[in-house]
Length: 189
Figure 1 (spheres, rainbow, N blue to C red):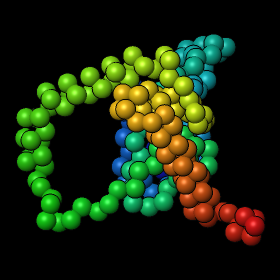
Figure 2 (cartoon, rainbow, N blue to C red):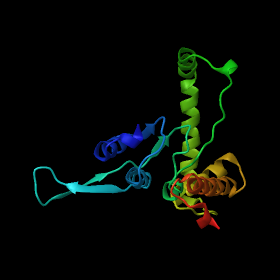
Figure 3 (cartoon, rainbow, N blue to C red):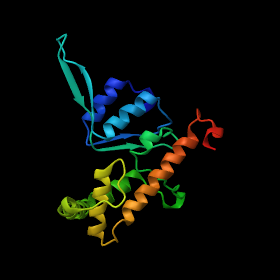
């Protein structure tokens, strides 16, 4: 459970993974929210250098994907909501559910084609990234620039993905405010 994860081990966990994933998240205190915000933007935490009294050491946190999954509304802080891409998934119908063994077998059979497709797609984005222009700059502007390059690769009109991301951020910020138990609804008026 992320909410019970001590800060030091969480920071170590975040700094040692390409994708950090936490399942069944129900909520977390503001200090964990702050740590996740720092990790999302690639910051660091100062601490003392081991076996010294005066040397500072900076533990650089993860600068990549952090996956937070849960069925409860757990993102109640607008600053974290601005750093998230929120996805609301539909429940899977029982008739289409398959065993993990089946899924792994099919995934392994398709893995070469999946990897080739991902590598081709990412290389196309990387070719366009240096000249990609942001039409809807947000706090995570480098991600918006990536979306701009994706629009070019996909042949989508400029700004479509970027606007969808901006809209998603506004919805997440509103949800964070409305789901915050400490918020006084009268303050919104």
